[in-house]
Length: 341
Length: 262
Image 1 (cartoon, rainbow over the protein chains, first blue to last red):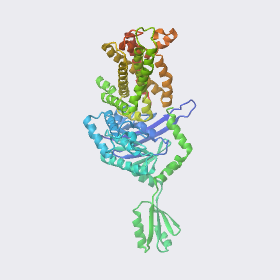
Image 2 (cartoon, rainbow over the protein chains, first blue to last red; image 1 turned 120 degrees about the horizontal axis):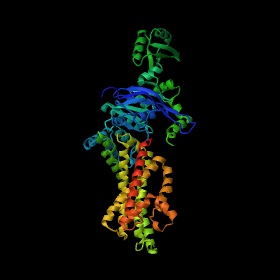
Image 3 (cartoon, rainbow over the protein chains, first blue to last red; image 1 turned 180 degrees about the horizontal axis):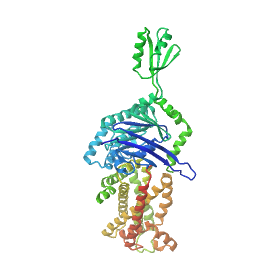
Image 4 (spheres, chains in turn green, orange; image 1 turned 90 degrees about the horizontal axis):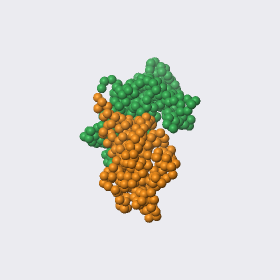
């Protein structure tokens, strides 16, 4: 395949008011981005930010109000069936037949994607192995644990060799251990099968751990998109805190000012806090520098801004604050349920 | 080119897949298999048998009440199973399974066709078991050819109410409303279908209500093919059922194709 597996141009979705006099609500507002083959993109944002709506449009369940997108080179409005053939999706809410066993669900899915018997059997065996689901495939889904159910859904999502896999809040409501496991499976999939993955999340750790690129979404807009590293760096400089063995920090401060990559120096309770341009590589430089002046650094520590700080920087609020606010929860609930009642 | 287009709309493998799923789901829940047969059995055993001891139906000389009731109970089974199978689209939607089906590269018509065929197969098996039970209780079938004609009527009746169930499910869209509708519409359809009493002996106002009930023709067709007694000619039962069935099935699959997945 040539070109990018995902090209999104000015994608917009506006929900019309249910009743007369109600306000139209724009869930996704003029979103554009591109993705390279084999990348994992995280759409990071609070509940109701428009992540799920964006994913639904890209996997052809919702029709966009404006703008366009190409998935695997096919238009999401004009060539729905072509798009559907080359994607896999794991929905936010459970979407698996609980009356059937895991294997029956996988078989069902394979047939729906027109895999012939031989391919189907091989592929089902493959994904069972890959997601470590051996021994559980003949248990009814309703009797599996939540984590196992989710793993079956992920297994199903990439059963048909998709070029692009959508994961909508894949680890929502999972315990820490199961979440960590699933992350590793997702990483493995991405590395082993080279699948391009788009995942939505409101967990910072998830975006940070898994994604090659992160798009921060708030109120339907992408406010920033880059690698987690660069996003974090853009927020602010790394901070180095160091202590000098001898009480001679005063002389050091003056000489440190000569270094161009040190932007700011603050003395606090006998330790120095330096705002620096760069990362870990500055630590040995600092030690050498102090050494050459006959000073011994007794402790040194590097602080990096977290993705949490990044989110705060771009949206003016922390993701947890937003989650905790009752009004926001209510609003997001209304958005989710308002469309169908 | 045209052949490819038809193959896209009527897609054999997914249709078979949906059909298989319906069957597996039904057979997996033992309570459902037994439960679905209990109500018709109760009607035959606790209504048909006692009534056949108590009285004779004046209009239909020489026919026992159990013989008269049996085709009506077969019709009831088809009504309830058909409507339920069509309406269980709601369950799939509620439990999220529908979304996974709708993002598959399969036409919606194939999805609903396979699903309905699965539900109809289940309903047809139930109906045939009821016929078997009725025969075991002493109901005499009129002829072998009549039995095969009865299967045709069963298929039409079942398809009619499957379409009806899909329409209710797609238009109502939630479980609570659906249960209310089941009781509000399905029971009157059942009670006013002539399953319990002959339409000939009703006053004209009631006759007209029964004339617009599609199940009336289903029950009448089953009665004429199974035990050889009927209010209308068989060709009329067949034609009415066929027309209503096609109309409801078309409307049902149209609504399903327009249904929001979420």
